[in-house]
Length: 165
Image (cartoon, rainbow, N blue to C red):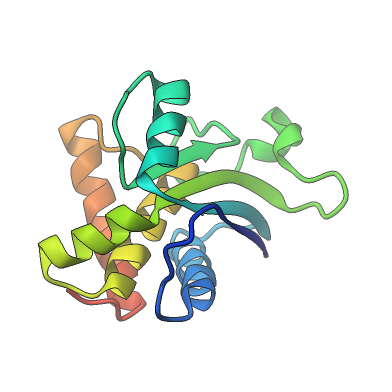
């Protein structure tokens, strides 16, 4: 497992956020039974930067908490069977790892949402990471049925990681 973490903000987390990031990503991939070693890029930024990224990539001129940019396409969410044959370019040529994609998180939003929802910053960061990993593996919440499935998976991942509200 390779997790690249970059920081483009001076807003500090007051806990070992790198260890939490690795624990949540590994736990989420274990939960959905990803059969490959994976590579994930995580960028921690601020509201202004995530707003710009959101505007450039989604034509939405607003800050958000997390953005997910998957490398692969999944006809069935969380099903990895066809990747090697149909999308060999999602595997790193040197390591063979599945390049899942990029996660961008606004540290400002993590902190404000933790306060708003009345739980720890660690729990909020963990939730956004688990949510984003599910997106990188093809899950979404556009349709009601898909939203229910994704929310249940998020709940189970958070419970398994003991990151409670």
